[in-house]
Length: 143
Image (tube, rainbow, N blue to C red; front, side, top):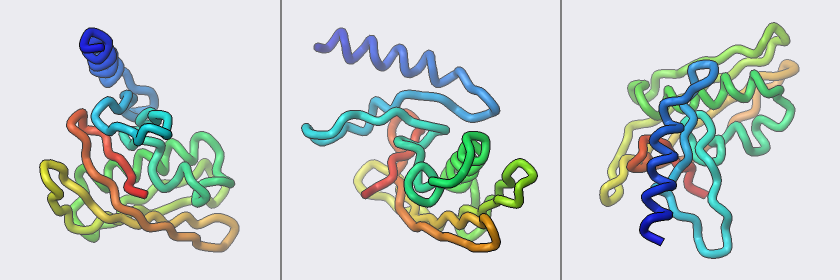
């Protein structure tokens, strides 16, 4: 079991250096699912893809979702509290803004509440959540 864990961690570290479209790609080995959950990979540095991979981004295309996930990651990772990180869809008028609040610490993890607003078809939809940073640098959205 120990060898398997080491192999998985080595593969995750090797994959973490691979990126497409400037988005980090890694497998989240730090966040452990409950016994009746299956592990989710980190998409764009956020386990499970963050708020945008839920209902908020249901009507977005692949490129739009990738841009939105990248904005979530940048907001969580580097943006000052309250400073919006924006993204644009590919010429169809869809766009969004991600705004992270002040980070706080829970045990050994840094966490940040954030909101993500998507503008599509003249309407704005907003979702809120909190994500905590894992040891491997990815973020896990709390349910």
